[in-house]
Length: 404
Image 1 (cartoon, rainbow, N blue to C red):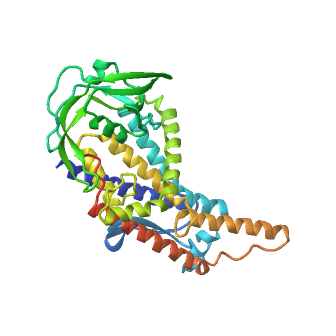
Image 2 (cartoon, rainbow, N blue to C red):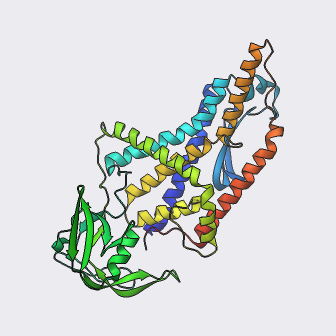
């Protein structure tokens, strides 16, 4: 039941993010004297609508976006005589840019507010990850059943008894170099006698010998991708992680601003990697293992929201929703039509062109002919639509599972 509630809440969060994005465009356009004809959430058949003043507000059946219809957004729009002076394409450059950036800005503002809530309510995570083979807390060693549940255990485990500590970075296991947690786990589980760990502790190289315990654990069959129970060695230690830092309302403001900047950088890096993820997505659709770093659709994001809500991880829920808003904002900055960034690029081009014409004593040029840009726009729409369809298919046939 909690899972369903989480899915619904995250879907509503996505809808609210889109609604506020379009509100940003609408409020700015109205404030600057332009006419907003329609404001709708969703696409496809109309569910309901109402009119207030000169604007029609409504909801459509397919919750995959929304739109704000500003009169004269391009010179191709058909205008009523009374709309001509208020047409967007006839306004000053700075007004047109403000209208377009306001939708994007709304997503960043909403993301920042969510980060503030996270900072005060649960604390901000440290985005700088510890070394891949850094050791976390030590514990006793327990058996695992077929459902992945660990049995009860007490006392110090082999790692703690031997002197391994949180923060130790493992470099070798019985002389074999390890560079990831998966390699560390594999080497540890495969040993049958004492294990010599070559570690680095506060810059000092050390060797620690640990006598493991034999336990039953779920292990992954690399050939079939299935998990099965096997007797392996275990020492009772997990990977390292940084605890969140909690703030009060005042100190949360600068901390959230810095965190938002870091999130924006990571979002841009993620956008740059999206083309390279096509192969991984296709592999997931055709039966391969789903990489948790691959992009997700609205459906996939909502399912992940349900997964974290089911386990009471509401701080992760909020962070995911904030990340989504940063992604929406950054994605719309791309200088491609029909995205907001594409319209901003056209507006900027017209300004530069007219400035150069003015220096030559020439009048301003005509508005950019969007008909000539339609082929490039269609290419973006087709590629973007295909990518969305691929992510949606992957989320249906091979969804990301944060918890096994």
